[in-house]
Image 1 (cartoon, rainbow, N blue to C red):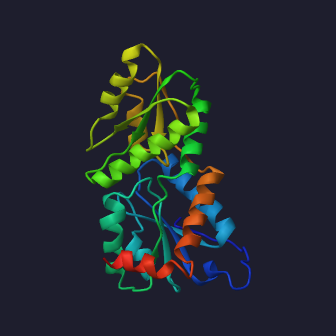
Image 2: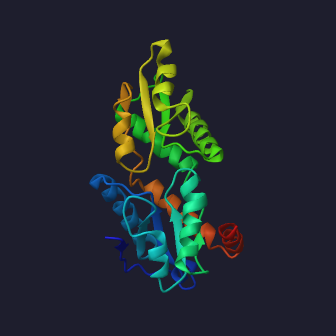
Length: 251
């Protein structure tokens, strides 16, 4: 299912009533991963009205298909934790392919202090204790800016747990997660991996094969993630920021 209907009534004049929200995720063959994206979309729908989902890879519907099918301007939220290739290139191309000129794209979800707070909670749930070595494991990107955003996310997590957080990438970028785990464990401490991933899938499954002592769960459908998505939506349609968002999209 790609549409999560809601009978929520927004206040009169609420700009979210003038757009069609779309949550854009990467896509996965993991049934649990798809369930998490659905849970997030359903929770967003209860806040802002009917919200659809689209995927840039693996399965459909694609963003261009969903945008073309909306009767109001599509408001797309990239459910990505950094602004890499899919956000900077794939999504604008999907908007152009849709033939619509009224679509709006919000900022990506991460990095953000709210995400760091959820990552800290997942560490605690996994059994992390102060003094453990921590590696923040992210998908990886050939985009240096996106990789830099992951390092910022690590600094945000450090501020919450009071210790150094190393960064490791699952694909493409360096250091790799195994390299980061090896470096973090040289002092003899337990190594705990914080998953900088939104939902379960192949990437999260790989994390358990890299030799860490503990691997935390993905961020999941946490209420703070839902709050962040709604915040991104409202910022993008603000009368003071909408035109800037559209200009960025058309570059």
